[in-house]
Image (tube, rainbow, N blue to C red):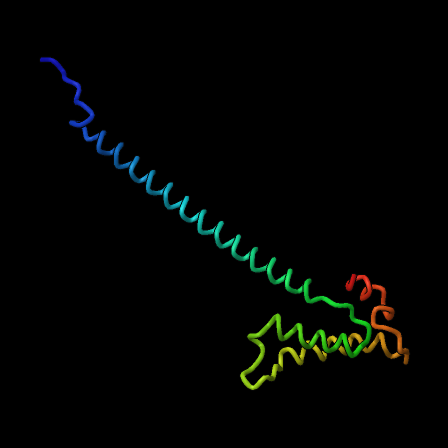
Length: 129
């Protein structure tokens, strides 16, 4: 009696190998698609941030007085966080941020000086440059 070796097809090994290869191809395709989606989302976010930063830089102007600083903060908070502005135009969240910042800035202006805001504290002047 001679022993015959079963072929790949007869043993079912070929079907197992082909199924494994098919799954591997599908998994690689899914990974590639996911990687492309992540890359697209990243570039989309980066482009929006750059556009926003570019718009902020383009609209930048030198602030000289305390009143100008307050108005700039008021405008910027509402522009950067439109979700905080209620339909009636009021924004308690922005008002809260403004009030706290004004408290901090008031500590610099209690000297009774009419100096420009930038001259009050070197850190503010560096931030503007």
